[in-house]
Image (cartoon, rainbow, N blue to C red):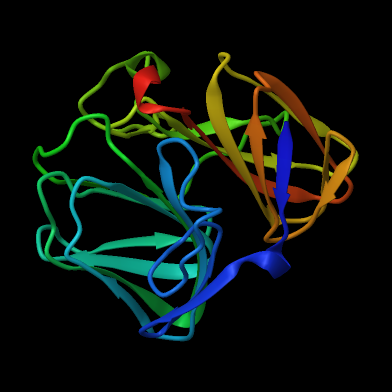
Length: 248
């Protein structure tokens, strides 16, 4: 079953300098029909003007993944050095036992970003930050794992992050990215009983005969495999998480 969330139906929250379009309940936007999807707690599309800043905190027991759509962001927190990422880059903050303050400041040209919060399998632990300025593209336009809580997704199991190695989530989940050329498609296959949530960042795609445009989302239940076709050059992000706590 596929449930479409149109960009026009999303909640809007102004938090400090940031304008957020929220797929699930967040801050002042409360929607009992859309609280979370499996272990995916937050999906927010945000925009910051030049040199503006989006601040949060304190937060604990959540993995916050921030993917830059356009522009540049500098991530700041009370625990870690500043980390700068550009378009196509990813910042991951695992808050663990607690992080008092965190923020993302846009560069001189402003920034647009997509942020997803994952609930960890186990509470507590030492906070961790990772930052990747950019990821190498895939020649076939298929899905690439940006972050994962499955050790087998990093065959090298190296202590140093190398280009192409996924960042580490603290839940058995995956965050994936696909850049699909016009007229081509990308297939994704997972195990039964997972909760999938897809967001169109750019372009127009077709998912099981449903057309989706920029900002649209789709919850995918009971579909261990699907194909998304691009009507024009498209970029999508996909979260694959456990549907219920019993599946961790």
